[in-house]
Image (cartoon, rainbow, N blue to C red; front, side, top):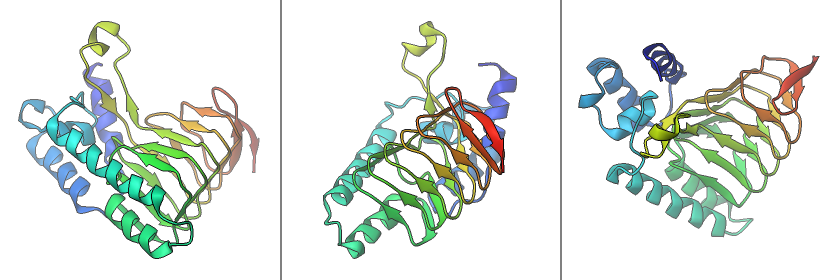
Length: 223
């Protein structure tokens, strides 16, 4: 990846302020210490900052293990045990404003990179690979089997097999509905009031106030 692409990813990582103090602090460190000097950054800082990083780093492995423990507890909690589920989500996620409803099972990588506004609903079997920030606006609906991927690998095989990875943030605007089985790829922003049809693969930004479907996902109607 060239310097221009790397810088673009870094700029995209600097989205809206998160509620969870850890990612916010790390973004500040990345900015203050200099985004062009990865030698002084931890693997977590590189991951948050959109740079090539080692996912096998002990600190990242530990963070993923903690997330898995929490979402396993969440998925095992009773359907009507709202208090337990809310308590776990407060530990797992980076922040949410309130009235969140995530149907089990739910899976994520780290959890702390996920933030949501009011009235987030996820149906069964949603997956969020939050190596970079994933930001949900207000009144977002996810149908079953929606998959949101911030993680990706170098496209050059010789680099990819060495193990390093990238991540790019995803932003889902207010009042968005993602239909069943939608896949959202790294770096994508979906604008407010937009509907993404079932089975779509979203590989690029989708504007506000449209209906978009397909693989790759394309706008078919303006609202």
